[in-house]
Image 1 (cartoon, rainbow, N blue to C red):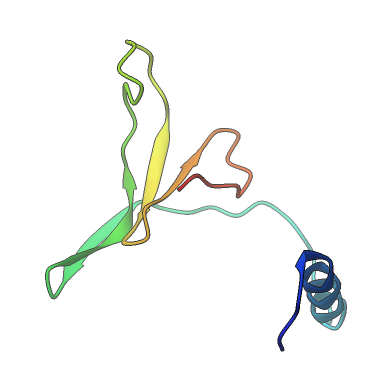
Image 2: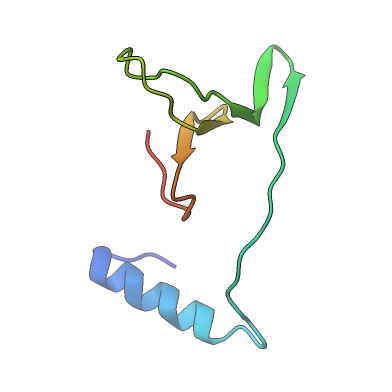
Length: 80
């Protein structure tokens, strides 16, 4: 399915989700992991610490190899 803009994408996604029988939303649990394949790191890796260099601590995990960063409030949003 090809869409032309964000509104069309949202509409298409809602239609696809509405067609799923018995779907429900809820919390999930994930676990850190790391593996190497052909010299490439794959994993959900804890990179918590002083990320800003200001002495503060941030709980942070990165999804490799795409380097998507997740942090509190752990709501599925990510940083690149």
